[in-house]
Image (tube, rainbow over all chains, first blue to last red; front, side, top):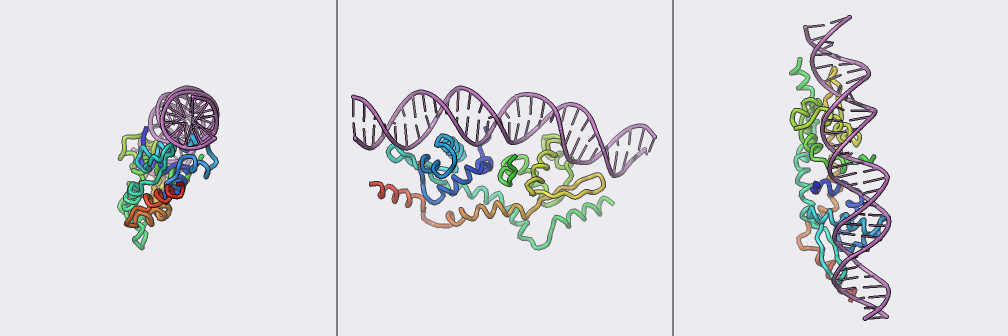
Length: 106
Length: 106
DNA sequence: AATTTGTGAAACCGAATAGTTGCACATATA
DNA sequence: TATATGTGCAACTATTCGGTTTCACAAATT
């Protein structure tokens, strides 16, 4: 049972949930109303999101409000950093390297 | 057969492949040498990465060099933008909204 | 021409996944 | 107290996934 942030955002429903609760905390029922799925299904997604600490909950009587753990989202951004360095470079390094390899082989 | 970029980067081996070929194009065999897996397994991952246009290939005789389609990576960055706006805000908006909802209910 | 090498793809398998159904439990409300 | 509501969780099912094995084919090498 792999439970990392990349596996968590792989599912489109979970990405939609994340976007939905990013700005305001919501209950599972309220979240489910926004999709063509059941409350139980949303509950399962929330469990997965909670397990990888992407989401936090606040009990409010019998209702549970879920909201995004925004700090955790930075981890994706952090992973992207290595590629950001590349795409910020003007010329196409990849083609350069490729032709370099080609030359070395000859 | 859902084939989007988020599902593509969900697998840790695929993320490793992406990192590996980000700076220089490599053949499937060369890639496989870097992991504890078979060439066929890598080939399957490359197929998935190709299907969602994260990777491009260049035939070189009987060898095929795979390299990262760096532009495609920007799509993840683009998706992150909506959250970047939030985490760049100093105070915690989420708690604010939550207490607002609480007040409205009373 | 025969053999080796690099590759894609199909068939198969065990594990994981998303969703549904049903149940249990706690908190509201009548 | 009885009923309605909000929720988590377990069991089940169909589908997908990652990996292995096997085969086919084309390009190099002998």
